[in-house]
Image (tube, rainbow, N blue to C red; front, top):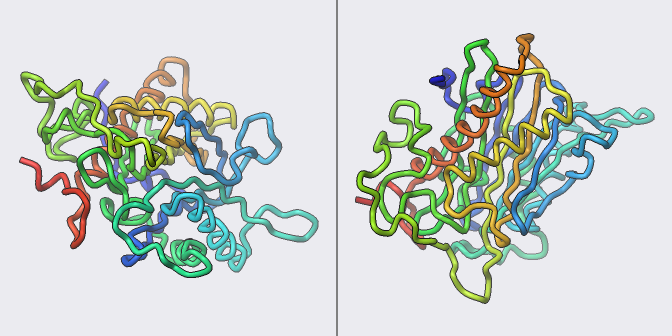
Length: 336
């Protein structure tokens, strides 16, 4: 089955979602937030060996709270978990939250990536900037947003190329939409060897990340394991974090299965993925806005589309990265 992209080719093609991106140019790091117009069913799956998270235990299907008000993706390693506090503060000011005995508590799970070693000035004083960045990201949220060197992808790096924030969407024949948002910062490579060709090429729609297809013949270095930091001092300096979303009505357990399927997109777009030195994680959201049913046959396409959409979003994030003064490594557009 041939998939088609939504009108924006962004996660916000899933009705009921908006995205806010902010960054600190001096620090070379940023924050992205996905906001839900109404509480959305949510879950997650971690397959990397070095995750950094907040409020993920509640996302397991056997735990009580089923819905969330937003999801945070942040740079800054463990410092970036402060971003969720800023998002919570902004949502609380708007009267948004899970009501408990007259109090409203915004439920905002978060995950972080490591971008501390990217030439940015991390001498930020007593407190890191991420709480304020999270607060600002809520104000910046919209259905239209830029990808590339923005938000949580602002300071991201891959093996040999700058990373970035990517997004993509897919509309199934029955009208159900799937969208992905991903901050691409893996230890591995998103291109076939050192070529311009993306591993995600088989899933590309149109020329959304260059239209180069797969190389033929494959380059001699196609199977080389290209690593961002191949040294014994700081191998845990990576992580790709993402959100996969749909307007289908899912249970919490089905949302977890959606997150698992989206990880296949990591494996299709990054070589290698899910290493002990990545904290690879996918959050899942289901807004339930679309009444269409997923029968068993369509469900197979649904999960395949989740993987393909994530793979495309990863390639789009790197493809859209922009060059800046002081970059450690080049952007994709400079590769010949």
